[in-house]
Amino acid sequence: MKLPQVIREKRKQLNLTQEQVARYLGVTAPAVNKWEKGVSQTKRY
Image (cartoon, rainbow, N blue to C red; front, side):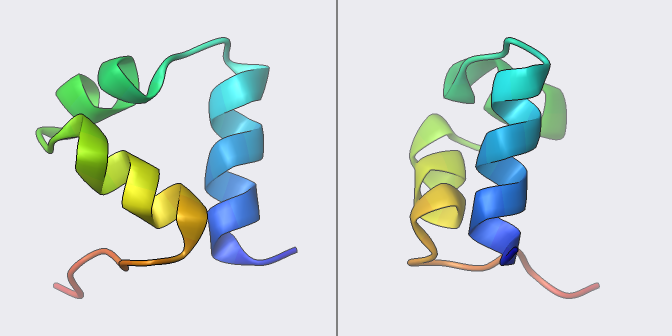
């Protein structure tokens, strides 16, 4: 399973919206959407 699939599956298992995940992580909802679509990746710190 690829990372975008893992993010989406885990979010759905926890019954969270993209907005809730974004708020918790301190990012925007469109960022979470892009991660789930595989369009954009997180920054590597």
